Image 1 (cartoon, helix red, strand yellow):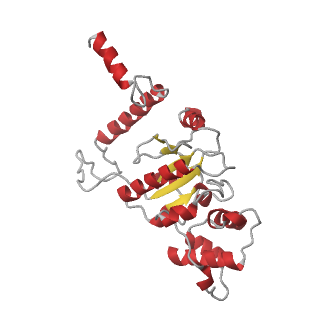
Image 2 (cartoon, helix red, strand yellow):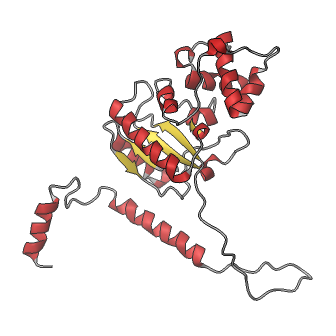
Length: 276
């Protein structure tokens, strides 16, 4: 290309967000593309026959035409527990950290997609929700730039709501399947913190919430641990499960121990009825 034309194009592109500048993640982007190509090559490879003693071996295979790509059915929301978007992007592009997410949303609302939705990010870790133990294989991980000790920025929440709406409609994700890292890993994780606006999300269709609990009548001998299990919590550590429930649904009481008041039990009962 003519060097004058190239210079003109760069001047024109300078008005765009990224201009002609080299991406600071060009090297890791290259590795990303290489890994995707390797997976694609693996998928193109014909299936090998399964050899079993005393059973005739086949020298052909029958590829079914009835399949599609796996799709995510959960969204797990995190806070980064770091001090900037840049720090988190670096963390998620270093092989030694072994952690990642599909999306990172900065405080100013900028959304970074770091991984194709159909690929498996390493964001959930050792976790459980209901009978699901391999959370990473069926979920999308979203990280919000927040250190865990401050409210979430309004621009950030606005971008999150738009992204969640896109994902919900793209993959037909049920409202109940928008949950937090602390919900699936009680006792190990606390994100997103008690500052996170779960009620606002639920009002938009992302996650469960409850109505007027003054209208709720608790059944006799209400078993709160069984109710927590029905909602989805792992109650192996009952204290951690109760703390996680409070942090999500009763954030004002999230630091006052692991007992449930009558009002909190009514909230739990209401959520249990929605989950059954």
